[in-house]
Image 1 (cartoon, rainbow, N blue to C red):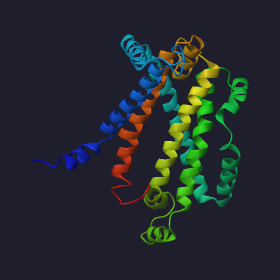
Image 2 (image 1 turned 60 degrees about the vertical axis):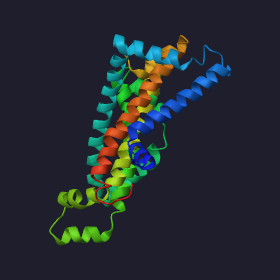
Image 3 (image 1 turned 180 degrees about the vertical axis):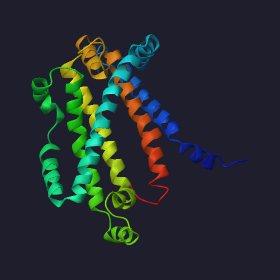
Image 4 (image 1 turned 90 degrees about the vertical axis):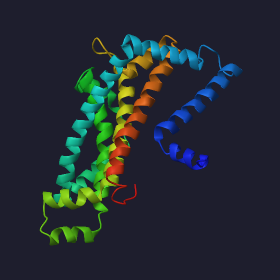
Length: 267
């Protein structure tokens, strides 16, 4: 007879199963709170009503439209931020003066919330997708730069000397030594940038609203709150959480497994 304890531990290693169990536990606590009448029903709907609202929006396609709209803006913001980060990081590696300048800029702008730039974005760019992307770039760029440049600065000197001794210099030294040795910091920068992108997007959409025929999840949450469509609002929040879990488990953790964990590094 197989050892059930070992079998359970083996199955429990799968993140999907753990996430399902945790989700069911949260749903049970939510339903118990609903049945206890702690909050008014109009503000705290039952699990079944929230799930029904989510399924309805998925079936009629409205939720998918809003998800794709938001993801498109996030992907654009992430790609532009990554491109700027690569350029600024390379400049910092080859010029101490530029590194000090970038360090100063990070100290100034990283603590500044993206929502604080909304008035400037409206005045400079107007209301629309470009203004939202502008706010997202600000939110993504500085923590990404902070983590990546910090990771490069922490690369042991012996690694750099070994790279130079085998003929690596300039760009080849960066790509062959600094990048592999800084993978944990680079992944942390991308994770932080991804999280900041969602926060900036939701905040900006709640202010800017819908500039065209469609809008994203932020505007959707704001409108549902205005009309007291609490089941629909919670359904949109659940979608954001599901996307976050999917990206964490199927993208970031896969990259970690094939790099950080495979190489015996700690993140």
